[in-house]
Length: 336
Ligand code: PEP
Ligand code: MN
Image (cartoon, rainbow, N blue to C red):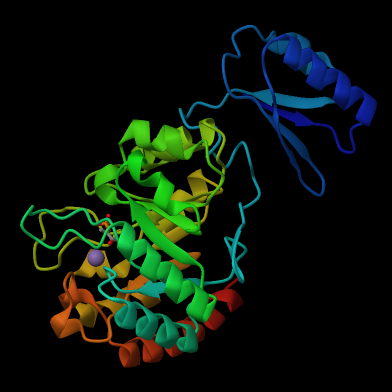
């Protein structure tokens, strides 16, 4: 339920309203805009007499939210959520690029890639340590040791780091990680999502291979309902009948998710394409469509990568792409 207040509500009246709601077991989520104050009510609103609420002096209107996602809903929170990480403010209208290898492979590799992507303008470093692989015989990642190396690269370059958690038992290794990624395969691991709601680190939540926007937003809701509102939504390609590319990048996800939700939208063109040559055009399309960020795989020697070399850019290709991203971003900002 959403309660829209009249312009410039008196603080005493607002306090009374909050106390009235508290008596009914509800703590409002307050959004203070320039002209409007909105109270979002999550939980059991059945004990609320809408008629009574509508008659209150400071109340302009009351509406019920039909969608099952509340905290993630733009109706609850009309302003864009901005998540600060390092020098980036993700969601404020700028373009944040996260880059790095699919997997951390060695100290030399991760530091070299970190230095090069930083020099090209990436604001965050990615690198998988716990890897969800289709085959149990494939490289499974370096685990806790990989996170240590990622943190060594952070120390060396100052870049905040993003890495994937596969199970809550791994959380002890994530104390110094800046952004925790929930991979596509874990998007509906509800126990994991609930636990991540109890910490206050930003979460990069990837869309499952065959999940709808609403399902993605319901997964975000799990994290938010447990208290962590710092969620970024990531479209990384979905499974369609097309099998020339690894997945199909759903560009519609950008305007659709930004309409439905106030959370930042990040695009992963690498896992969508599966082919390095397609990463640049997909990245530029995402920037033009208004994405808040990109997460791109970059490897210093893609031919020898332990994972996803085919879709990884070389540092030179990444540098060239960053220049083109800046050009498209400039044009996108000027669009009316
Ligand atoms: C990854 O980012 O390394 C990854 C495994 O991505 P996804 O969960 O989108 O497949
Ligand atoms: Mn990968």
